[in-house]
Length: 190
Length: 190
Image (cartoon, rainbow over the protein chains, first blue to last red):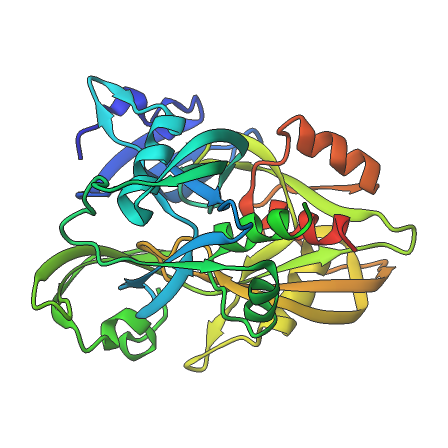
């Protein structure tokens, strides 16, 4: 993975006593570190670095939400999610979240957004993973004729749902992705 | 980690062409697998197994929410979270989520709940991780005199907040954990 040690937050932790790089993969790096807690106790922690990501609550002019459905090997299921993607890392800097959000929206749904606002940034699994997602609200959407192409190994289908449809799907447990549940909860209460 | 291959969902995927176990840790297992997609394309995927967990939206009789604050090495921060914990795995079976939720609530906050209801189950990071969390709503809380002890390497502080306080904290970006943001969004809209 094209990222430097100085850009991985948990490798800069004053509490770190030792660090072992276990795996350097395409999307994640796994470390096995020893830390000295404030109590003086030495503990062992398995820590994963993953690039930050952006996710988009994208609402059409007909007040429908755009969700994408794709096969997720980790859970062996096709699930609905808000459009999202990893922020690129280049020139020793992580892509600005808003730029990445607009790119992912276009790649995954074929829509551009004239208006985009940050909702929140959050950690998805702070117990052992440093991935941070910034969630945006995108509106004033325009379907483009020649959108950015999807990644070659992605196969994403786009859906548009009304609030009533989403409520039914949530009640049936058909929305299973946490960032998507959070985004939908915000949208339903607007 | 004390779990068998047959109990890891993504090792049972018909699309799997090959699988390499990279790391077998205390809380996670990392695999590097090759998969044959429906399109016929062979893709490489880094996949993490982590035991399922339970999280609890616990509301006191004064309509305050219980949050815990603890140091999280992966993000090098002390953050607020709803009480939560990994479900134990023993006798070749994963602990029932409701039992684990009540145990974690008592260990982390010193409260027992007379009433507990499931809100939803979800995946925290379905792109590369199979961890599933079941979120419960706990109420009719009773402070116990001799609660279950915290895990030896945990140092958790308990807080109680009103809805007004939570709204202020969220507006300031002080709640940074995704499952907690989702739980709070539900609570604020009740």
